[in-house]
Length: 266
Image 1 (cartoon, rainbow, N blue to C red):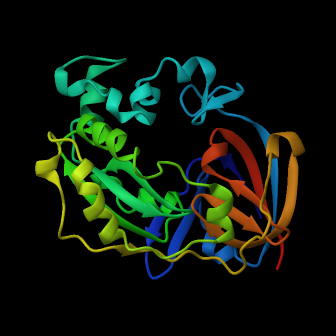
Image 2 (image 1 turned 60 degrees about the horizontal axis):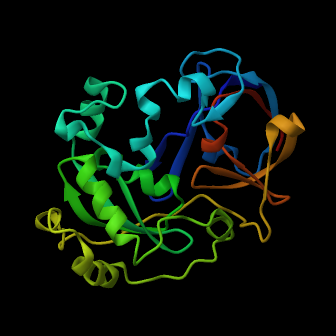
Image 3 (image 1 turned 90 degrees about the vertical axis):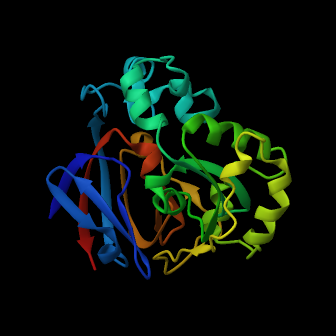
């Protein structure tokens, strides 16, 4: 069976073990069921997630012209402290920006490769943590808009990391840490405008990923360059497919690629 379609971030479900799904065209695949199967991936062409044209992907699944034009790729996406919808000031499309920015946001701690601080919409918990490959996470602050979450993150990243080392995350070289203690330690550095929204009654969330074998030296697959890849799927963590030969493929980083996927054997 051959499946074809444009890559998009895998939807997930937080059960006893995280469940991953891949949408390709009209097909909806449970990727957990493909563990220990030999898969073949082929690059077919580009397909921008916005305009749908066969144009080289620039960032976030969009071609260059769309990336610098559409409201869902504004700078405030990656830098929430730049959000201005709460002031009634538009970046690219005020109605869209209000719909995203003016809703509850969470500032959190996650342990994926190390303890890091991050921001996400409340509706994206625990999806955001799963996408980052965090095996434990904890809310710090719940604020009413993206701007407050952003300025809180900026303040806290002076004292804790804000990036994940993807290689360390995939190798599973992670130490359990006391996120509750970290939350209390960071409380003193939360900006005054966000301090009333501090959360002190939430417990850590633990996540368990479907990985049979972690890579010791993960090597990233560039499917556009190689055009084709075949290997046995042995794990999924974050948005990465992990193969037996230690090749890893980041679905999220390859959004906008139209691919074919086939199960070779097993």
